[in-house]
Every structure is written in structure tokens, then in C-alpha cells.
Image (cartoon, rainbow, N blue to C red; front, top):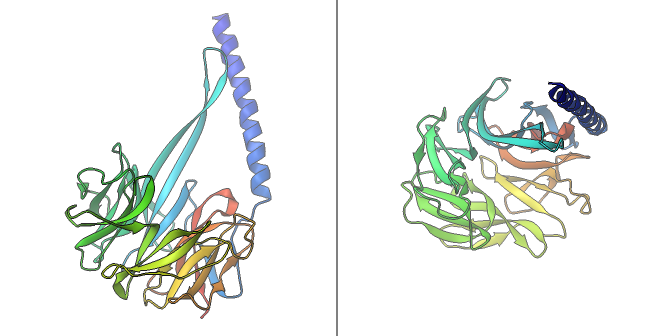
Length: 323
């Protein structure tokens, strides 16, 4: 009993000290970090859309503009006392898809072990990557995450992800790792007729041209934004430069592309939000500062939703460009 009490006391003291150390570090980091992205004069209405403790990313707006889907990664760390009296930090990670009504604080976790959600064109359901199997597969459910229906019965690569669906609901474009590279692929809505289209990631359709997708791909040492015509296979590089330009997304009217880039400070890792014409011209910066932005998408009214790591935690924000 004495030995057990000593061990318990040692554990409690060490836990308190480590917790205090972690809290002090966390406080020091947060106190010097911006609590909000900084909008430029070309943007207005910057607002935080989500504020949960998980890392929130990859927003997708419903066709009617009322709802938002996004990834949430919750990380929980705790201390474990080993038989050798050594304290180890163990970490649990829970990846899930969350749904929320835009402008309303309440959130609704839909599916655990899932990521990269997107809406069916008519808003009747969602498709996403289900990561619970040994290799992630593409599945479908209703808008509340009920009814897990496998589209690809088995993984078509090492990491089936980022699914999007054609306007007619017949074809799914997605990415997977094949031969060590992230490939853009297609299959029909039943999981058949699999084919590899090219190399790239972060795909999205042009709402006004259902044959055109936008995606990230390497050009030399940097990530650049490309478009591709799915019928002809024709590719166009929209961005250039010795810095990253990535995560392109079309506006609902097909006139603009939102994206992120570190072009304003290429030696820093911070990527900020930009907008440009659909042909790659007239680039305008919408955010700046010490934060990092990613994965923008447009709502029907021209609002851009994106992820930003203000307060050292990625949450979903929204802003409108001044045209």
C-alpha cells in the first residue's frame, strides 16, 4: 500500500507539472498569435463561422446555400505512467464530418472516421471518404450521415479521397494514391468504370462548365493551379511563380476563382486568400498577416468560406470580396 501510494503521488505531481508546462507553452503561443485573419481593403464582412476545439477544414456549402459540411479533427492527449515510472504522452485522434447551418452556432457531427465531404448536386445526400477500412473508400449517405452505402466496394488506390460528382449525378471524380503519386480518377456512381485521368489533388468542378475541373499539381518545385477539360483532356496552367498557388475553387457564376498563395512572402509558410478571374488574370489579395489560410469555397451569394489557423486552431471563416 505504501508503494502504491508513493507511485500515485509521483504520478499526480508529475501530471500537474507537465500539465502546467503544457498550459504555459500553450498560453505563450496563443497570446502572441492573431485571434483573427487580417482582411485587406478588397474584402468585407470577415466573420468566424465555427469555433469548436477540433481542427476544422475543407468547408463545402450546400446547393441551397444554407448548410456547411467540413472536416473536424479532435486530438486528445493524456499521460500514461509506465511500469518503469516513465510518463508517456498518448494521443487519440477522432476524424469526423460535421454539418452546421450557416450563421447558427450549433454543430452536428455526422460520421466518424470520415473526411472530404461534398454534396450531391440536388442536395439529397453527401459523398465522402470513409477512412475506417484498411484503405479509405468512397461512400454515400443521406444528409444526416445515415445509411452508409459503399460506392467503391474496395479501395481503388491507397487513399481514395476528395470525391466530387458531376451535375448529372452519374460520374464521381476523386483522387487516390496510385504508384506512389496522388492521381485524379473517375468512376461511375455505382463504382464501376474506374480510370486514371492524371496527377493532381484538391479537385473541384466549374459550376458553369460541367466538363471542367480545377486542381493542384506540381510545376517544378512549387504547387500551381491547373484546369482540365474532362472530355478532351486539355490542361491549362493558370498560375506561375516561385511560390505556391493552390486550392482553387470556382464561384457559382463561373466568373472567379478563389485560391490561397504565399506569393506576398514566398520565404514564409503562410498562405493567404486571393481571388482572380476565371482565366487567371486580375489577382486580388483578400487576407494577410501571420495566419495561414486554406481550402476556400464559394457560397451561392459570393461569400467565400475558408479555413484559417487564427488562435493556433484551424476554424472555418467567411468573407466577401469587394468587386
